[in-house]
Length: 242
Image (cartoon, rainbow, N blue to C red; front, side):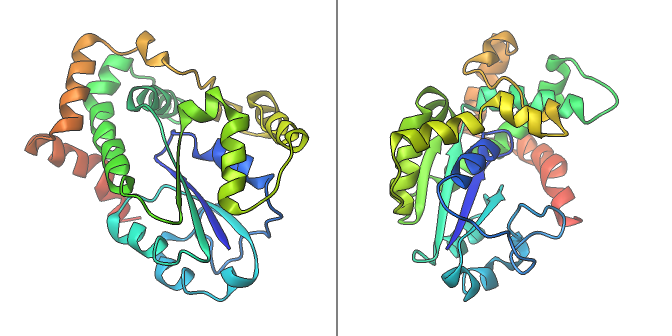
């Protein structure tokens, strides 16, 4: 079985993937399934072959992904026996704050949040909205979760994860999985400690202005032509040439 922890960038898919690791004995992701650029990610370019592969019928594999294109979703959800997708979403406002901090950490310069929002963030919001919209329809092999539920009731969500996978788990095992994947433990193990932020719910209140929130609300209901053009140039063109 191929298990995929999927979600928009900075929505909690890494944490979700780490929690899922403790539920089954997963084999290392083989070259035939993994991305050439990121060993922990499923290869989006080979999904058609992957979902038909005999390999995922005989072994359990866990991968990450940031998949949101409808044709790719259709491929993953076509194999309900051997593929399980855990789709996690997050309040777009908090996801933007997390993306802003990541954006600042990987660049030699740091923009103010105001500059980031109007030049980059609002277009990131369009992408996040597309993620949520494209994954919204119910599918038999997709488990929908969200960062807020995972944060406020990690044990409860983990029990649901196990049930979806058909795995038995007791309270002690759940406590151990949660402890091993606490933000403190994850930072200690990582060579990119800055990647794992505090993950507070509602942190956006310290960043977004009323005008930004109004703009976000409009974007989520209707995206203008200029917004779509800006989004395409910032977030789509680089994928075409990757």
